[in-house]
Figure 1: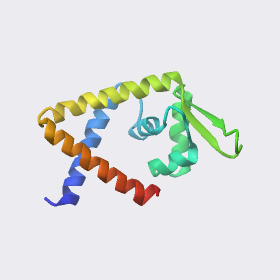
Figure 2: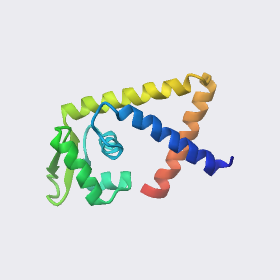
Figure 3: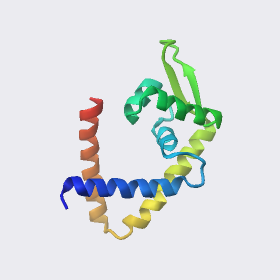
Figure 4: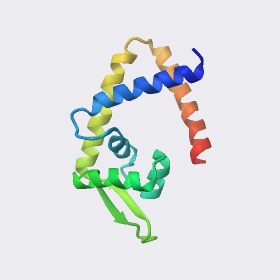
Length: 139
């Protein structure tokens, strides 16, 4: 298998692992990704849209669900009233931490079959790949 095929397989397996972590939280995959992408100090709705590669209407639907469930707040920016800042509520921060913990536990099952050197190699390679993705799509 070549790099693209391996990447596709990893992506499908990652999604399967990610979805199994969501089963207890009444969130879609897209809503969970929104929640997990919002930094604790907040982010503009436009920047969140770019980070997630979602159009504004899809993002708005996801954010409305999170807002309705008390997981986020949406406030107008004090610098520019045309901009909305999205922040996690304490309930949202708690869910963020729970989701990350569940995802981490699911991955531990997979990574437990690797030695420490392999895990560090994977982390370093993923950092480099993510850096290149950021330069390509967010730069």
